[in-house]
Image (cartoon, rainbow, N blue to C red; front, side, top):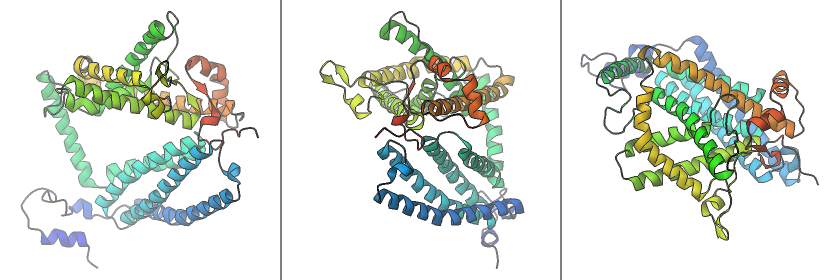
Length: 432
């Protein structure tokens, strides 16, 4: 049988343009090359994984329904029945969809459909990240995450290499961006959105340093707010990571606000304020919910009343994880951020010497990644110890020795662990 991609290539006229005549339907010579045997073997394993997983999930669903009907839900889930069942159901549906996607992805690899394989790799990356987050919410951090993390690494590598034309396009785009950055630096416009649609160019370099600076600024603002308003004269450490003066919720919040408001920097104050309040409040509530369901960690809980006798609708809606006053504060911060701080921050970022821009960013990003991973592991071990689960691995023993309960309580002074409010299957069962 003839290859349909080669047949398409021969029927299209030649416009004397490079590669595939800029026609995505016309496969280039590189795209028509067979995928290496080891990658096709991996594709076969992916397809086999998906085929085997589907009936196993069917059997799992059947057992779960059977035990629930018999009233044996305590065998299956933790103390928070509704939340755990909900997250388990979401994870199961996601696993089913991912299994189907794995079958299709494996088939495209075996048939050397490079462009289709690249697209399915991107889809599976998103699904794998979502599965990892749900696994953490149900089982914490442990060896069960090794497989999806390895799969995520392989998918990321394949998405970047499987289609040669996409790889070449990315390389050309990188060189073009480098040239544009040098020209912009000469004109005093480095980091700006040269299209005029937004204020700042939304690339990794700019957004990463927005995150870093706001992690520190946010921590300073929160400490001052606590010392002046919440508990006058009393210092409280409000750090959100295991090491360093960082509060990542403000870093990620600033990145979200920058991405969302970048095109609004010329708009009116009212619109920017409302969008900032909505994004900041929802983000704060989402982070609080994920931390509580994953680790039983409660770092903030707002009053359900605006004033005595007057209910706070936002606090009621989001179960105390955000409130109307703090959404108004997010709105004010977003307005101040996009109108005043962002232009000055861009000038600060551009002080990084040109030759150090990417090497320094890579090193700091790697250190922050290690800091974040160790923080999550320390929280997970803290959750287990409070739940009465003794350390059973070298990693858990390391955290129990160096980051015990007293250390964690002193480091995260606003945080308490309540295992019975999590969605974890290893949370302690309530007394009868």
